[in-house]
Image (tube, one colour):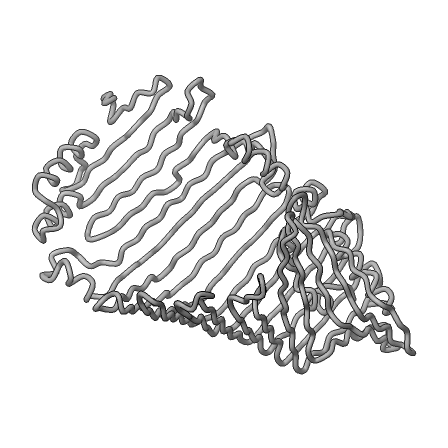
Length: 500
């Protein structure tokens, strides 16, 4: 489970699914664990407790939390839950069929806005068992639905949203030791969503809809025995908080339509498997995902023709430190788009004779390195101070170009290299290092661009002169190689020859 700063916690889901469960537990054990869990992530939870036989009922539940200095506060309200002891060492968690959750936010200058989210369920069966030190939640449901009118600001709502999960099952195990460790597995057969939005001034409206199949999530979070008075993720990371998870879906479709004063548009997307991995700890944040079999089409009244394109695979990865340190820490960035194709109609607009090869295009940029973080990225006070001082967020110590690859229109460029950034009295970093580049089909691409009229001859001549200055011929026809270096004096050297 993830608990990110300034995010409204889906409280109904937490109460249902994020608690403990195998020897005997009581209703009080479950409620105490929920309360301790909420306190550990910076919330205070209160409610009216009443006993009737083997059932503990909590009503008028109110959850409050500060969003940090000068950032306001939040209040979440929901009606009730029942915790019924089964007599077999387990506790059934019973929610009303409709659970409204009202969130109120107050800003530092007294401004307020509210948001109401309504959770509905059918066929929900949730229970907790185990011991107070090792609890297991199990839950199944035919359908869980979420309805929201979005935030209301000055009496105006800007969108409405509905979402449905079907065929849900899952478990959450809580283990209490030096920290609270939560292991969670969830699966759902499918999901649908519908979002409608409108311009408050009446100039347009739109909607986003979609269907997603075969959703799964597996994750672990580690909560320190920490009680904070505000939702300060930086303090939680320093105390040992960590969370990570893997989210997967099967094929999905999405539609976006908009009717505006200037133009209408309609966009359709279809995707294959989607994978998202997230991990956050005191060591930093890693966030990455992949998606297969993208198909997209776009139509708008502003253009007399449709746009369609596809990609076999795409992905991204981001890794970065989050906390201030005197020692350099690892960072990484990967962007990839592989086997990209577009509709022949678009090609024919500028190349009706098919002079350019229409092979699928690929772009990969894979970077890594080390950087020294100069302030805590998740601490509001540090962010505010750095903004006032106009400080840079980090100093780059090194950069590795692990892969650079571009394949398009019959040409390909590949490269790799590394750079160091030593301390200097210059107002900007001065890299020291080099990169190796290989270009295949570059001259052929220039010839084709000139032939179809996209590149004037004088610009083509300048491009060829630049390639002759920076590169040397390779072993095969129409291939060029280059070694570009930068030294401590700021000189640029191409293939052993200083050019600056």
